[in-house]
Length: 634
Picture 1 (cartoon, rainbow, N blue to C red):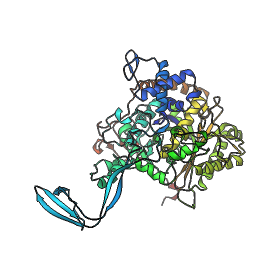
Picture 2 (cartoon, rainbow, N blue to C red):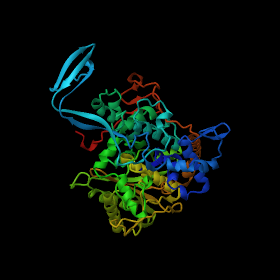
Picture 3 (tube, rainbow, N blue to C red):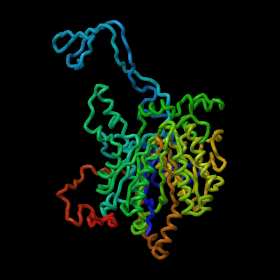
Picture 4 (cartoon, helix red, strand yellow):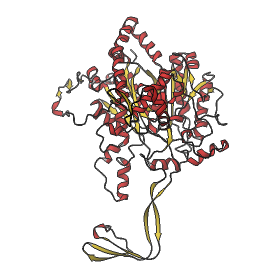
């Protein structure tokens, strides 16, 4: 029978907050929520940001003053709003007005100086004359010209970023010594994903064979801070030594390695597929196909990206890709603006000037529908399919091409096949890549509009979450999927709040854009198309089905009586999820980090020619394999 990849858990952290419990999504649509949900959102963010603590007797502010949940917005609301979503770069990343660099200087004429003999370079320049002074000191005389690099600082021309909420540090929640930020975020996101699914770290080992578990995760930009690739690449030029951890920690697939080793303890399938800004959908496609083929029954999929380092800012800036402060201010000059509005730097499909970098870690648990049914897993939605296409011959490696038209059309066709003609036309909407660049607004809107025309969709709703969150590179589609799941839970499509008016070159005859949030009824939208356009011609579009559609498909497959029993089993799962959300709200949910637990060695295995029994796993690795090429057997 066909196998549907069900989304049975999701979690993570991005500029809007913690993904679980729909907290981050609620931050996006705060104004559209009920008073009660607004109070819960402010309280959740205040706890995450370290602005409140829960002690015996109730809530207190960071200074120890008691506070009631209903008072949090009045006392901390502005601070919470200012410390989330897009904003001016904060100094915990780097000082945007004092970015270090070296100024190349050439001196004409001679000079002399004294220094310790041990500090002499191994290969002395020809113009250096060295005189021993005794006591381990030397005098150096230089004749002629002398070139050197003088440490200096300059102001970053780009100062907007999508940063994790102010005050939140994932590394402070566990023993994170020497871990790059992206790996800290990966551990937090994967742990949050498990909690939001109601799963324990070892539950998967009870339900399926070891080889039926998979983890697909990576970081498109690698770990580029000083504890990873950035540190060991710079060390020799700064007169420092690289550490033994920097190189291995920098590997792009390291988020998957950390989750396998320190969260799940998995020996199953693993990997990290890179496709620039489409990377998360690439990995999701691999997991979904493995589940549909039967190779995998449970997969954790996600990306963790922490690119907020000076070199990455400058690299994208010189490509004319980022929104520079002066350019953002120029967009608002007609309104009399005299200061940059960092909050509104990203303006998808409007008058814009570039994208904004962001950090984010987003994770999803996929399992086949039968296993979800058997275990009573909560259903957040499902993956209808993911389509991937390259661009073909291009003018330049960074320019867009034909590939995204292919993936969008394939996704629309699959949506029609699953929901029917009217389902595509009336019950689907699009999460656009929506970077906020002048080129994207033209090319993506043209692709969406052409597909809508071809399929007879008259007014396809389009949303663009990057106006709130920025562009988290490889994790970008994860932010979009998180937003889709939240929209179904809360009945709100987030507006593109920076869209004062569509730019004149945006194609929109068959598209529907809105600056305001749009409320909708349960069941009104059965499918969300998540679109990604990656540097180099990496295009992907995923079709995601709503919880209602997914449960309807499961009920049809199982029958009414069996499905009623499944719904009864989900009650225990909901209780576990609720308990985790309470822990997270109280600041008691910590990342799972199983470093130091007993290691499984080869000698611990029970190995025969038919199976492998591994400690900690209920079921064995099955070695009763069939010849997959039986029809061609020699």
